[in-house]
Image (cartoon, rainbow, N blue to C red; front, side, top):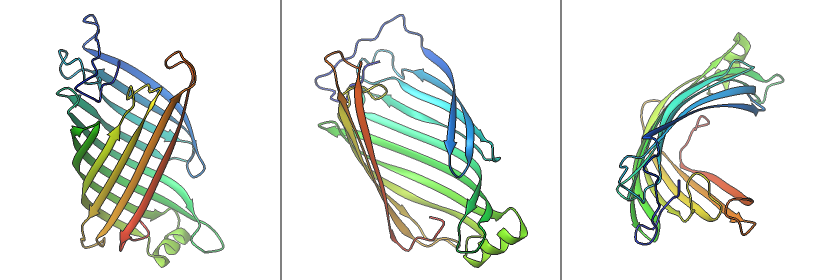
Amino acid sequence: MGHAQDVDSLKVKKDPKDKKVRYNIVPLPSYDPSTKFGITLAQVFTFNVDRSDSISPPSVFGTFFQATTNGSLLGGIGGTAYFNEDKWRINPQIAVARFHQKLSLGFPEAASARRKIFFVNLEGLRHIAYRIYFGLGYNYTKVVYEGRDEQSENQLALVGLLGGGGNHGIKYLLTQDTRDNVYYPYKGYYMGLRTEQFFKNKSQPAYMAYYIDYKHFFGLTPTEGKHVFGYRVLCRFLGGNPTEQN
């Protein structure tokens, strides 16, 4: 399952006996201070878009569902397709969520809120040179806040969070990926720069969102993949006129 970013120099041998589609089901425990303990169930399908392509890493597509002890629910479908000797990367995603959370809004008691989210994301990236990819994307996000009791409903209304709406925008993507393997890296880094331009509508003002995502991996032993150290830096900045819901 080797990964090849540099299409001019790196080849990956694939066993012709490999299955066309590999299926895995993965249960994972989770904990978040706002949604408490939970369990996530993921179904993952791994496959090669073109089995004669010895450069592209395997594509992955799957579904997931999460439920937590405070009644929060999250589900979605998505994946990443690698094809044409890793010159193209396509990432579609759809997710829906209902989070139950306690929000500190400046009142003596925290508001008990229900946050509903609907999310659609599509990204397409093209290899340029030196393992650099440039791409465009589209994003639609709808966020609605509800109070779980009358007092919380009033608190959300007073701070302007009650209700909500949807917004959509265009993404501009620039990444560099030197990892030796997209799934099990033991050396290399991934740097992603993303700008999202959201448009004004009846319920949301226009604003810009800027993201930096940097991951670096180091092999700690001569044996590849035996002991690996990695870290990640993720930053988000907002510009323009974002609201509290953004």
